[in-house]
Image 1: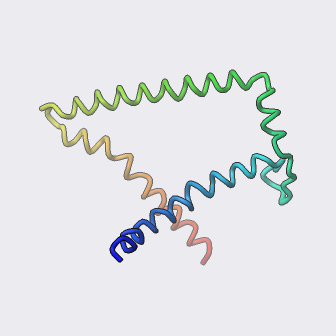
Image 2: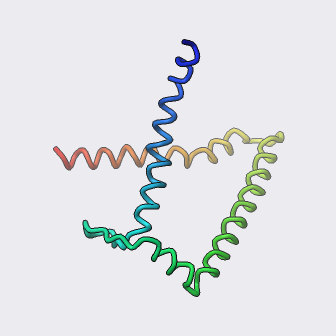
Length: 126
């Protein structure tokens, strides 16, 4: 009885995982095997032709290398700057709480923007 109750608590996380990660992944794989232009309702199936075209394209290797350089480079820079900022804010400096508040301030922008968007959308429906 106890084991099944514990497993029941995993259900919301599993539903969220399927809804926001697994379904879009499988949907993207399915769409990659079509010739859909994003506008028309018809999605002609082409199979692996898109992948064959991608791997035979002359720019493919350049794009992969540029993506790897950008991804690895930006990750390294973010880690170094984040560590330096954390070490700086862990010392005894004047105004540390103000600096922490300024750093956290952009995180407050998304909920505000979302509420404004919701307000605009709901006013258009009335």
